[in-house]
Image 1 (tube, rainbow, N blue to C red):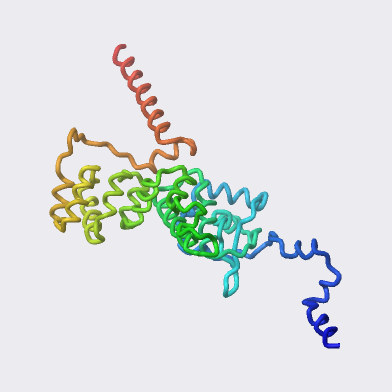
Image 2 (cartoon, rainbow, N blue to C red; image 1 turned 90 degrees about the vertical axis):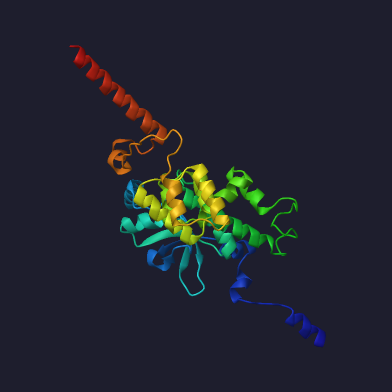
Length: 314
């Protein structure tokens, strides 16, 4: 009798429905599905480094959403306190808001912080244009997530999250992004820049290489540098940035030194003419590169110059 009771106790019936369902149907119930989720229930990914701009491309996307709906579902993960967190699809969410939509189709997936971070970065790095600041913070976030995954013994015995002990997370990221490992670290250095200076890098007012050198300056030194650049309408060359970095490390960089370095005459220095981008960008197709814009401007000026010459010869 006791043996019979033991056999009965070993039978686990969690649900009555399980008696009448197949393994296929039970697997299907656990499969990820696309759901229409209210926009109000979806929050942005914390520390999302990619800017969602309300530019012309976004307005075009909003028009498309209004006409055809969101064709590619976003990816969200459930939040502990309720609601969802956007992992991939921030631009689609913004376009849906602009289109007056109340819901957006999303795939709901259970993800831990590191998994979500890696997916968020990878999905956004596919964009046509990524600013230096976006790439810098994206690389930093993904590298930190990969390093944390590598410290989990349930994923791998390697301390760097890879089955090959010789390969580090930075090397893996470099391979995935098509960059050198040193270039990955140089981009990550940009995250040490003051936001005001980093914005100048995005606007191409400060070149990438000098910006990396300037990232080693202390916070107060960077503020003094920014104030001087604004007042004197100038930016440092690579050599000047390297000098400021060395002086900072030696504890000899101050406002006066920054001023003297920035205002010194550079070799072969010539007066530059600058045109605000907003004044000319509207005349070019959106897919024009900077080189194409420059070539077209020169071509038009040459035509104007030849016309003037012909008029003088008459």
